[in-house]
Amino acid sequence: MIKTADWVIDLGPEGGAGGGQIIATGTPEQVAKNPASFTGHYLGPLLKPR
Image (cartoon, rainbow, N blue to C red; front, side):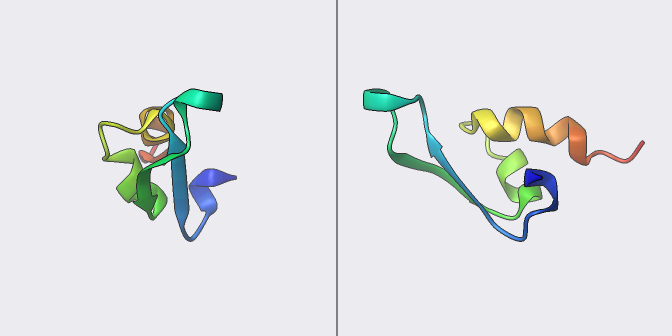
């Protein structure tokens, strides 16, 4: 679902007390290019053409 979103707001870097910061915002492609984004790390390969 995230890869088809118009805009993503990635919060983190962890859950609970270790989270709550905005790590990345933008299109799924922009978030995938952000090295600080755990979401982007897993999203990147899903966006590559097969």
